[in-house]
Each structure stands twice: as C-alpha cells, then as structure tokens.
Image (cartoon, rainbow, N blue to C red; front, side, top):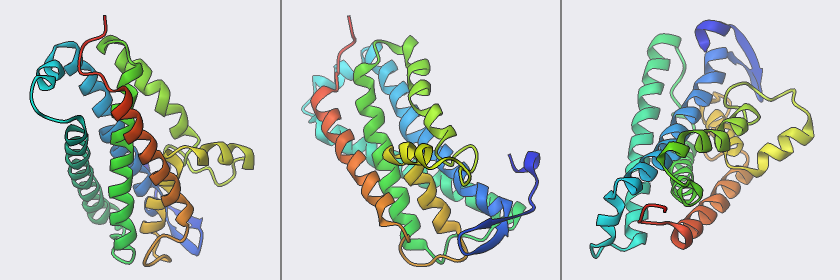
Length: 219
C-alpha cells in the first residue's frame, strides 16, 4: 500500500505526518481483524464440520472457558502481529513507535482483539458449513473496512456514511489505533467513545456466543 501511494506528508489532527504514519495503524487494524474475526470464524466452522468441536463438547470444558481461551490466544497473536508491523514500519519507513500513547495502544489492542474474537465466534452460529464460511465472513466485514478507515482514509466522506460506520466496531478500532500512532497524542485516547463502542460490541459478541454457539455440525 505504501509503495503504491508513496510516503509523502499528510495532514492529521494535530499536524503533519508521513503517509506511513497514517497507514501503518490502518494496516495493523486490518491484520488484527483478519486474525481475530475472519480467522477464528473460518477455523471454528471447519472444526465444527469435521467433529473437533463435538469432541470438545464431550469433555468437562465449559463454553465460557473455551471462549475466554480463544480470546486470550487471539489477543496474544494480535499483539505479535502488531509488534511485527511496528518494527517493520520503524525500520523501513521510519514510523515512530506508539510509545507516547502506550497505555491507549495496549487497551485498544486488548479490547479490539477480544471484541473481534467474540464476534467471530458468535458469527459461526449463522454459517451453515465450512464451504460457506469464507464468502459469508468476508461479506460481513470487508464492506465495513472500505468505509471504516481501514483500506482508505475517510476524512472527506459524508457525515452520514461515517455515522453508519461508527456504529460498528471496525471504524472505532482503526481510529483508536491511528490516534496511538499520532506523535501529537499521549496518554489515553482522545475519543473515549471509540472504547465504549468496542466494549459494547464485546458484550454483544460474548452474549451471542454463549447463547447461540454450536459444538456440533449443522445438518
């Protein structure tokens, strides 16, 4: 993306930064969502079809522990992805690490990974089989990425479109990551609304997972 669009200067809230500083957190958001939401939904659907989840059901493992385990695992994976991207950005594109807003960065990553993992687990309840997993999962998230500051900046988008995107968790997550990379930000995120939206979707994802998750293949 950066090779295509170059690395000239762009304006953000607070001042001027390199284009890489603008795009690296967007790339991070895409990677985390791909791992936490897309990856978990497809993997669990496949494991359900081949009977792996059914065998789990025969053990004393409670669903809530299974859910928390998946959230913890994906949070660790997401941090690993974010660190790799940050190091490459620092070495190759001279993008500063989000040390000024490290608390906000950590909270954003934990909340984002947990939210998208829980939503990915919940979404498996509407996927009939593994053949349908990829198209259904991608259809549920890729359109949101196009309007949520993940693929392209939406600074000039109509207010109504940004308003729609803000209802869902993708845009708040991407914007929060962008704020942590801004050299003009420090401490906690300047927009607590993003955290509130992510947390609300986390609650929705956990409740939906506990209520609708299926261990057994669909017939």
